View 1 (cartoon, one colour):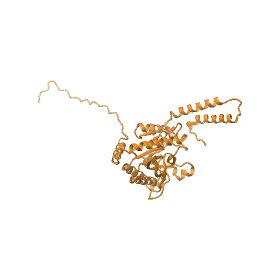
View 2 (spheres, one colour):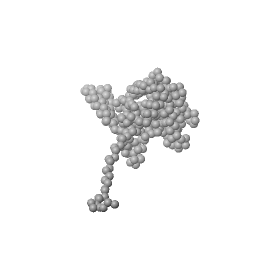
View 3 (spheres, helix red, strand yellow):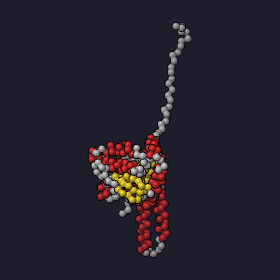
Length: 341
């Protein structure tokens, strides 16, 4: 069953007309050739798709990042990687299935992959907790990253989450502390770390596995301290202001590349990653492999130094200096005939 976003409706209408014409042509129900009409609709479909997707707003890119047919972490592990061998558990409490991880090959490179998995159907979404990890998930991810460091393997982090799970159980097991420890420990791992945002990059849930030497991002993904709806609820007390919030937050790949929050944007097929999973998988494979080749040139100590400098540079801003205010000093007049003391 096809699924179309609100702004894709003109495309969906043209696709429906095209399918009807093709069915009529195959059935031979019309007494005249409709090949010219089919060609015209096909051309219009291509031009309409290009027009719509060449000027997407921030909130429309957020909608694409949440598209139910968009490839998820396990999809890339089956296509962009080879020989994925999943590892389980945090060795403290439980195995959080919202956070996946294990050994894999990227080309000829042996790597450790960690990432968030949302789930495709209702059953899997519940099983994966909609991609929102508990503290156990972040502790599992850190355990696997430390295992990678022991064997000098690079870490690739695949981010696709609306945020860490905010429930009572997560708070009882110290979700904030688990994320904070990950931030600290990832800064000190003397191995290459690459983060890839494939869909939603929400809040501390994304940042908990997002500290990296290179941050890559798909063209229609987003990366933000808060969702547009959450921001709108706080600032304007109205979730319908989400489009305004999305623009103000600067959460798109182009904005974050300009601000030097991410280092590279991976282009998606026209219409989004879900329109050609094979093509986006190949693009992800090439981008990750090229980035890993670059990072292999640095020693562990050099990686730490460059990582430290990278995050120290984030958040710079300029302010216009305040105009200097001239202070007038008034001098009391001297009387002409005043006698000297």
